[in-house]
Length: 392
Length: 98
Image (tube, rainbow over all chains, first blue to last red; front, side, top):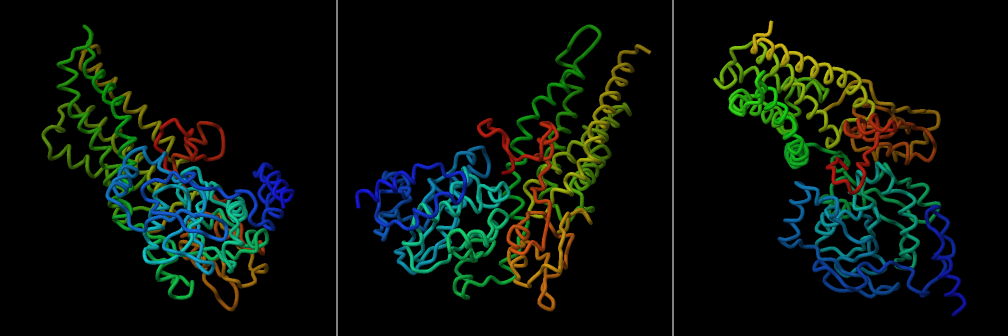
């Protein structure tokens, strides 16, 4: 017995990166030394309510009701870079009091993914196997392959799922499918991969209907709330870059043959600083919010058209933007809609229906226009200054 | 909502299809439908090139240049001279899509 454990330990120390290398020996051992990961080493965060004794040792039990502080953390993760360190430890968890016949749900170790799953399992008895995705959500991690066949196979083996339960199925979120080959998982572990619904909130219905998802459960949506919830992370990074643009605007307007004058910088710059905020708001908030209602399929065009409409209204109806110099009007109409267009194009990353080939195509035509438009705006600004100074 | 027309790199080889229906199950945009025991590409322009269908087709009947349709990732790739990359340098604190 002693010898067997030693061999087992030796096996466990082998590098695991070559997915599948670790499988055979570990599968066959039971009750050896703790190969299983033991999340948090027993020093649990508040959302762990206790432990359950499984055939393979103690498993932490996760609450299925989120506390207010956890819901607040979700908002933080939606709005700030807190999302980059919002994770749980990978490994096996329980909800309710699962037994050898209970379902196994696979999740990522982004805490938001895990929280949404466990709260959707309220009232059920189930196991949750959390993969190490580097704290990234299921969909994005599947795209990169970190939520993938290798990691799933590795976890099924290292957490000894085959001796934890009597059945041979794991429920993988459908949005994990880009990273997981169900056929290979079956071959490597004997476990059938069942793809659950896109949204965790449909899990109860999915299980009740005998592990079948309705076509509606299989479709990814992008409704107005889905889009709005993503806009803070569009606005936030754009806002961080805005000060650079404001400095450039102030310099352009403050610059005189005699030096830089703050009064001129402000009086001339204010409409353009307001315009910069407008362009940002239009591209990073209005365009995502109104996405399906703006003409064209291209995000770059959607962003440009919407912003152009906004700025045309402003130069015609808002006194602040009614310039005497045609140069200033031209700068505003050339530069800001392009800026909004660029920001709207960034939203392709958050959207649920754009594809890589399309985004490449948009950039192929878009980037030269963005660069060209910026050069034209700079030339117009130079022309405006020349006229202002009366050099010519 | 539909994205650009005729950009998706989705390729389907019906002669290899066994009609298991896995592609239709994993596709989040209902691109495939089943007809006479085989899959059919019913809505090509809805394809977002996530690659789930190709990855889960055990018979090699589907291929797609999978990737994430994210402008920031493509621009990252152009700047670094690499393939599109969502990897914003980890701890650099840059706020990226995924």
